[in-house]
Image (tube, rainbow, N blue to C red):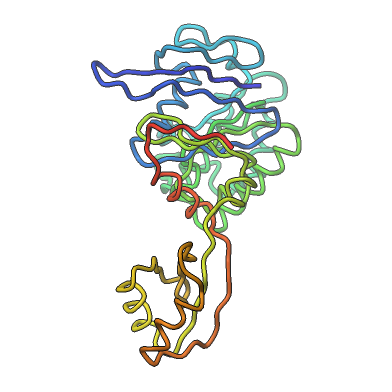
Length: 301
């Protein structure tokens, strides 16, 4: 479907992408993850032929370059913030960019799918950030693409709109549409992505299925005591990694000591244990674990 092979990019003397290689299978959702400035948007712009690069990008057997966009006819995208004509309505913008047969039907369908009918006939100069974002997403979907590339699509969306977008992505996936999605809202990516590609300082540090990365994530203890603030301080002083999670203490399970040893630390301070349970780390925990490794080290699981 999409193959990125030894992608590199420099701005002047600064190299921002180093030997990036990955593949996306048809009908799969890949989450592209990394800190601000890691190179995610540059990767997406390279795939879309917006910027020049070295290496090879192939979609459906056709090579993509900055000068040859034939392969991109069945690709929809939202990169950064959507560029909209302020004096056109949302419906007019969608109609303008709609290609092929029955443009009105396609426009009406995506307006309904994304729930933007209440403001589709208002000029976009009056749109809020969330309204602009939803229209930008609609533009990415309007021509029934085979591949959709979304850069931070949840920006500006309220919880209801985020849920509607998630449902639409999963619905399109069932129809065979392929996705590459960059987002800092890792909890949402965890719900929809089949694979994860992690970028750090322009280098690929992990290619993994979502199932594998979660199964290898750290285990945590959820602890409730009669003195949680005091317990947190005591555990930190004794070298434990402690976080707060919904009024509970979330403690990275120690590898070099037993749970009983940790509990003894609390008991000696007259701290009573009310409840304790174990939980698996989430995608955010997994990302932090990966980024603790050297950015020079490439992993594939």
